Image 1 (cartoon, protein in one colour):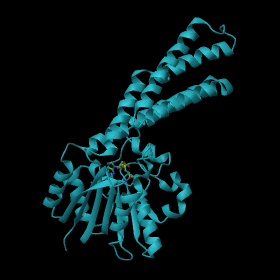
Image 2 (image 1 turned 90 degrees about the vertical axis):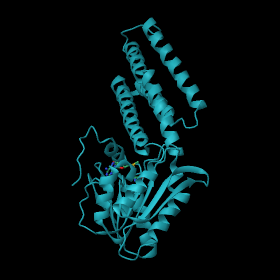
Image 3 (image 1 turned 90 degrees about the horizontal axis):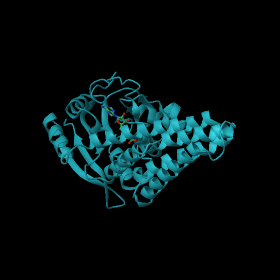
Image 4 (image 1 turned 60 degrees about the vertical axis):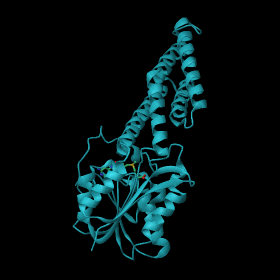
Length: 327
Ligand SMILES: C[S@@+](CC[C@H](N)C(=O)[O-])C[C@H]1O[C@@H](n2cnc3c(N)ncnc32)[C@H](O)[C@@H]1O
């Protein structure tokens, strides 16, 4: 069993429990299609029937599911495993994909540096935005251990200059703005005032309520302007959506339900901040992929290949590293 994270640290586990298929649902849904998906199909096509394959940092199993679909279509009967350091349970969180999910064995809280598998168990290991999150040297040694001689590994990793990272940094900027302007706090304050008016404990249009309303309008206008000029306004839209719903709910369901809504918005934004910070950390400095390649060579891997992965032919979304454990 790998390193176990406390609930507070496990922001990835919380994310996966909500049921997204990939880590890129925020405005970049299609990046597990097209060239990226084709690259994975190409990788899985190199394995013979009944091969044992592992997907590390699997999350809700997006890449393992591509392998499962391929195995099913080609009648290959792969034995598929997905492992993640976070608490994962795709059987629960992806019920609508039960048929595919059930063909994969998931290993929750299984870090790539300490995998719960016998030596030389796997013919192949994959990882989509996964390997770069690990302690690289330890993970390489562990992957060497679980791969059979002649086994192949393939990792698509974040790149310092990728579009994914550019969007991630933009989300961090937006989250900082929302938190700095205390958006949810002032929505809550206005909620309290409106509630007092609704309860007849204050006069409609009283001065405090008007001040709160003015503040909310001002901040909402700032966020809207920012959203209009951003190339990727997901976090701003998300926050304004929660704020707007809180105000609607206030009228129909009361102050507690409205506060639940802002509390949820605040919590989800805090989780997103941790994930985007983790993404920026994992992408590392310029040249990280090359240094991982050098480490892999030192570990004994051969036939190393590092190549850019693009979306729609031109947009850089990562670096693909493939390598072979020699016979
Ligand atoms: C960006 S997500 C990618 C998930 C999935 N591969 C996908 O593409 O949808 C990164 C995942 O790596 C996991 N992770 C981080 N460090 C890890 C480690 N040392 N060992 C295994 N998984 C790790 C996180 O818990 C998270 O689920």
